[in-house]
Image 1 (cartoon, rainbow, N blue to C red):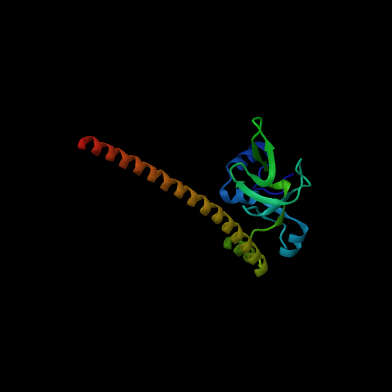
Image 2: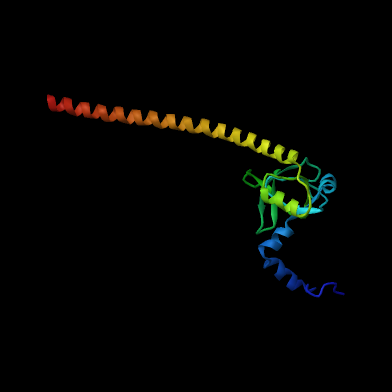
Length: 185
């Protein structure tokens, strides 16, 4: 018995529609359920997952681990990579484990993106300034740490380049002085 005349019950057509879904439908399929606290706070059941959200694995071998950040969202494969879940390959390299969004629960939402704040406002949800400020402070700290590390590394590289240039100049000057000495003799 079909409840919706616009949706086919044939498996072949279901697979076809999944494979040929437009970006908007794929994005909705990549929604992750809120945990109980967020569900009460925002009044929504789920929201599309984004990089920077904090999620918890609720099914599979990584179930029970503490919540961790989303590293990457692959819309083509409809999979999510998270920070602390890695798998060892046969050559001993560690690669991030990919999860289906249905196996995850959102524990902390990333509100730094203005589009996401607008999405919540469109659904009649007031976004608290405290949540936004905390997220922005964390990002600024991370950016400052990364810039400090990168800046120090760049200075060292520049110093090495200067030393190499000085050595090359000395060799050239020495070769020119040697050529002048030979000419003078």
